[in-house]
Length: 191
Image 1 (spheres, one colour):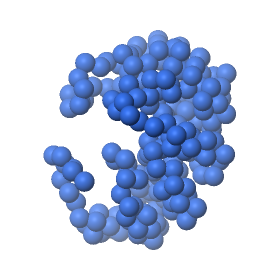
Image 2: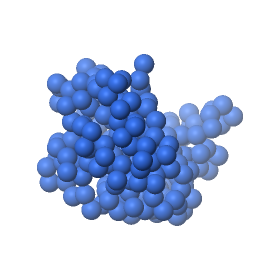
Image 3: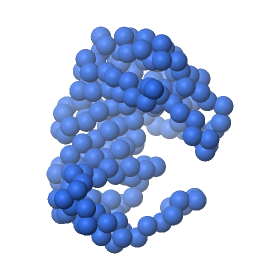
């Protein structure tokens, strides 16, 4: 896969780094891009687990078979799954208009059954999210263990410039809109 301008660090170097820090660190977060795109991910996570670390997986939910396999093999301790937007605005938010929600919906439904500790999260963007979207998402993931609204921050190195963060007032309103569907809904990234 093209890594763009990001450096490639050999797996052996990563594992050596982790091995030296076994008694300092408790866990490792496997994140991306989308880590489940890599067929050798289970092998890497097995090596991380063999060092004694808990493993958290950040995923967009597009590869439910890989995620289920990792959980069934007891390789994952926690999953954070992104919910980009309401179903109606998912493609717009992803910038990928031929996206199929079937796999994402499968991942959501499966996580809601509680096979592993998990959370859902949405990075809220002023230009992409409205109250109706929050209601739709709340209905979609109703009963979830935890849902976090993360405030968008423009890092200056974004693919599509022109987006901005919603106000804290708007985010707090969204929390209230979501509470009838999800008991544990909180904000992240609000100064």
